[in-house]
Amino acid sequence: MIKLKFKNLFIVVLLSGFCSLVTAQNKYDAKEIERIAPEATTAETTLSFRDISPLKEAYIDTAPTDRKDGILVGKLGDNGRNIVKIVKLAQEIAESKYGKYDSLLIAHKGKLLFESYYLRGRINLAHPQASAVKAYTSLALGRAIQMGYLTMADLDKPLISFLKGIDSTKLVAGAEKITLHKALTMHGGLRVNNDKWEELKKNPEPLQGQGLVQTLLENTAPITEESQIYNYGNHNPMLVMTVIDAVVPGTAKDFIEKEILDKLGITNYSWYTHVSGLPQAGWMVSMTSRDMLKLGSVVLNDGKWNGEQLISKTYLAKATTGIVKPTQDWMPENYRYGYFWYQSTLTSGDQSYNATFAWGGGDQRVIVIDELELTIVLTGHTREEKLMAQISNVVLPVFAK
Image (tube, rainbow, N blue to C red; front, side, top):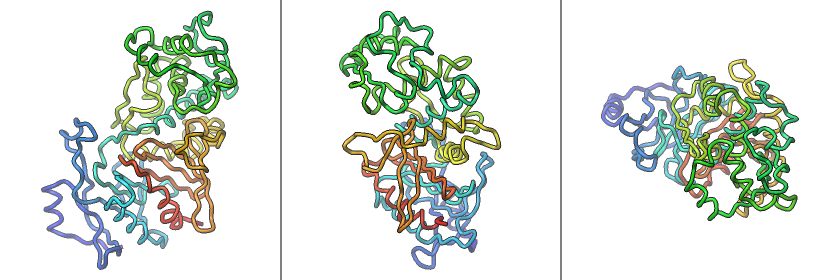
């Protein structure tokens, strides 16, 4: 790749804090230039994400900068890889051809090779995650198992058996049928009327800590085999978070911070608190795209980070298995669900690859493809969510063996 220097570009960087990273002899003949990644100002970091001004030009980098953040970097063009199609895809993303996306990052064999930001994306701005947070909660449970606070056998025990503050005499029939396995696969079986839940939230004191589960299991219809069907959300993530809080030393909040976020060097994030006083388990977390990549790297490496077994390998193998079939009418037919992680087969030409991914509304994804040693991060604020097809059609062939 040819490195070019442009004085006028440097002026643009100084004036605006962002720049386009791809220049060309023709539209898609990418050449590396000196650049500065777009960063949120101090004032912007205090804004609601929806109030962030869109970038005037996309940032497309085929040789990401080493920011000394624990992420190794390389060049997309190394080893003779053909980058033209990926750069073209990036340009199309910048034109919002597939929806409103804020970043696309690609790491291969442990190195970040491609980094791009669009619209509200900034390299230092924590991006809302929505339901991708469920997958992060699953990793927290896997960390608790790795550290010996739970075992794999515990996944099939009554969830309430870990909650010593529960008064089981007040619970509905069948409460013991809810296990961690059931909750992690969205089969908890709670049937609490939405209007009733809104009413309960108006008096948060009884909901604190294990009081959340106590209250839910007093106000639900009986738990039966018929009720324990796939029902996305339905308080299941918070059931899991309540168990984490009960079995780890201190609080779930401190445990997640110390044993996962600190271990990965993740400091630029927000993690909101549920009405129960516990960390949110299913949404309302913000994290940078690079830090999302770290979580994907842990999954790709069977739970390891910098040589340390961070997440139980046995747990992670099960968590990333397609255990159940989601039943939402909008769910793609070939998607399966494990322990808050999705699985699907991605097809590229005549090749198919198993993919594991965290997925949140607006199209936040951490995608892991073991066979190709590939980790991909998407962030967006779109309702269209059309980019996954291009991951299969454009990105995978570049790294196919």
